[in-house]
Length: 111
Image (cartoon, rainbow, N blue to C red; front, side):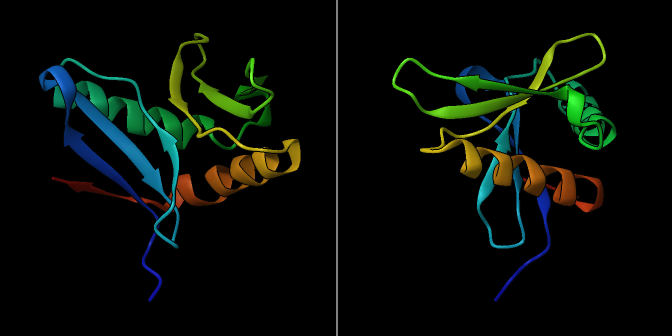
């Protein structure tokens, strides 16, 4: 059964706050860096929603092992989220399209 896209907000390593954006199929499509407090993480989610509609904010990269990934950047060029590693550039582009589609309408779920 498909669910709705959502931001999962949780406390993780070092008591920092993190979020993952999951698509309707439950797959994580974007993960945040750690935030010192919950309000910072919520601001990060708002920034993802705001910036995900702008293709120029997606910084496409290739790792040393030839995997493709992307970072979503805020207006100040800070990374607000990173993708998984993809085997192909086409798969990475599909991941970007998924973030662009899912982020604006995603709800927030707090653990």
